[in-house]
Image (cartoon, rainbow over all chains, first blue to last red; front, side, top):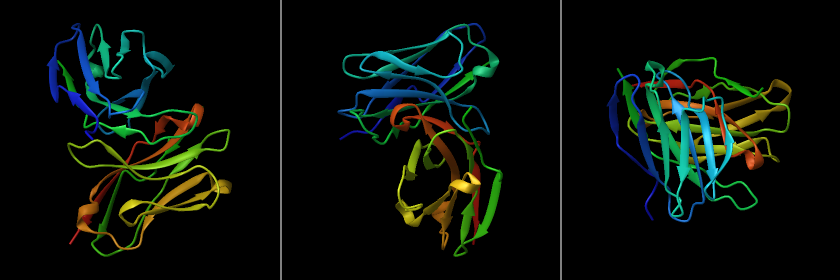
Length: 114
Length: 114
């Protein structure tokens, strides 16, 4: 059983560009959450997808968007990048079916915006 | 609004000494509470969780945590620290259905001296 994987590992973009980050959920999981972890801070919840539908969103602007695919992999898209978007982006997957189930985190994608 | 406070940014302990990492939360309902550990280049790993019942919970790697409702605290403890415990530790409160959207504290970096 493979764990949660994310690609790419590192990414450098310039202000105003767009970026797509990818997450492959753990096998059998139907829910994926994305978090932003700025340097020296704890992760902040961006949004969650359950069975391809957005299922909750944190305090992030609409230029942060996402997708979940039928195989439960996921993308995080960020448009019009700003310097403050520089952070480690973490995805976490879980199987949700009427009760708590542990979220498993990937190693993250380090995004640098210049 | 939900929030988590970890008062200590850095803690240094000697190998073999006991450890306590502090966590205070703000949440209106009965909280889902978690402790995660993050090592460099790795994703977050769940150490332990509290939902209800016994207020002293045991986790992996010899960690335990005690939930104190009157103090809104969920402190993490370990009786004897090993050099491999050096990492960053995050306390989190789970919100939403089944507590699967996490609000994290800013983290505590643990250094272990030999």
